[in-house]
Image 1 (spheres, chains in turn purple, yellow):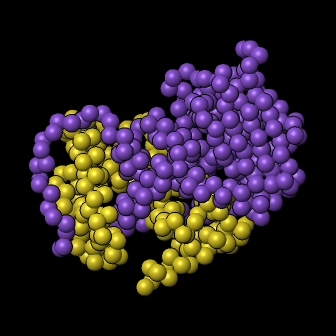
Image 2 (cartoon, chains in turn purple, blue):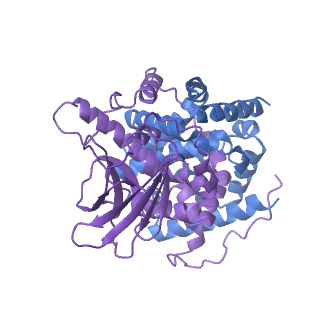
Image 3 (cartoon, one colour):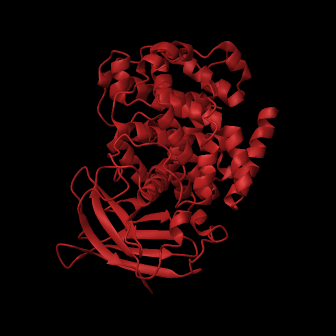
Length: 270
Length: 187
């Protein structure tokens, strides 16, 4: 083997767990050793720090050949059918698996919808490292979606804006703009907006039916950009409400707001 | 060569998915779901959870295939695996219960600690380089990196698994990653 020069096996026993070697954060994220809060921080950072996002991609490229060593396992036969159904008919799909945290009652139709919206919430938030970071690298990708965003009912190329006012006072928490042509949402926090330590701010869409749909965790200190998941695009209409709730890191685990709603506002045309 | 064809076919199928072609999504699924389930199952240790994550993964792929850019150096299977693995890790962190699969992993772990020679032969060149670079690490450090990757364990869980203090594990991993980087990035 033509390995590089063998490193001294005992590269000085520097007892240096100095806590932070910040340049390894992307590597640690890609390897998967971070805990939940750290992962949420890395994801948030990858959205507004393209260099950091690129580092994650570089580490993924370095490490992921290891998956060659993982034995494939055939999924059960009906998994594809479930996926197909979810894709064809997002509102009607049955939840993929009973949730550990589920309560006694059987899933009613709206609850099924909510289970799915929870999946979308994960798509919108947890997808970050894998898909969003690639988008973060490549902001133009956000604006090349026009061809793909033909969701019925979404007026093409319309821009809607909302100011989310803090519930406990006159100041505004966040300004949100949505470009329906690009299906792109931009959320810019205002100076007066802050959240408790170790909590996250999650943005919700509340369309005419009154059911909150999670749009993902937003950074309270920096603007965030996201692409609206396809099934929600038709619901982003004039007068639809947006709200911010305080959630555990990573966002609401239930698909519905679990913490206090601290700010809200309605979308309107520019 | 088969791998090259496969990669090209998958890249093409993802492009079609981005344009809303459902048949292409099925092509992607047929070609990749068993591998991705293997990845998720290793991390979650529970088939129901793993398939649930897999379902989310392909729904994400359906919605976001436009985000895959073959020019960026990520192969399509790596991109898909990154999505699935990331979701699986988020899920296992959210479940916050000790993994049921710990004992199962203990049993299969040994097999992963050193890549069997025939697997190395099958792997393509970049993969072979990764294994060579892992071989340069001290064996326990390489084992820690592999276990972290396969099982998606936190530093704390990894330290517990390998019976060392968390601080020691952090420096093992960080140092190993730095060495891996210089080894891999050296042409």
